[in-house]
Length: 219
Image (cartoon, rainbow, N blue to C red; front, top):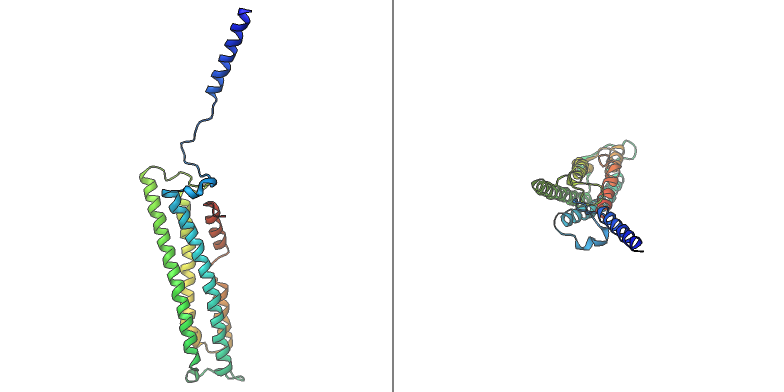
């Protein structure tokens, strides 16, 4: 009986040692837990807030783009009705109606608001670059912040977005400056289509913004 007790004790001891040996260990890499997103601080909070800001600014851009398109339609209708000759569609600079001035002022205001958005995107990129510099200083530039991205991934995404919206902004400026002086219906239609369809904002822009807010747990 003593031998059985000794053997049983020995087996339990061996089992306990195995449990200690194979117990899970904590990863040295910080892991994002969506359940605690309200408690985020430091780098994680900065990146998460920046992603939300980018999303909000792009939504504002979309609203401004629709507003600008509506104004251009008003400009086109005004010119077709009061400027273009129905038969020859000859353009006469002296026939520009006074109502066009207020419409052009509104379109210029839309453009300037879009310009401010691109400026804010540049500021957000600068903030992420600051986070990247801090991460490099701490030796954690390759750490995964949330799910799959490191800081560099966020910076690259911002670079791609800024390149598209900056190019589009230049087109908006050209349209705003020239739309009132379009010499025929075809040119007016071109300006209108170019504004609403945004050729420099590629389909991938929406995917990039969605990736930002998904990666940071906003969606």
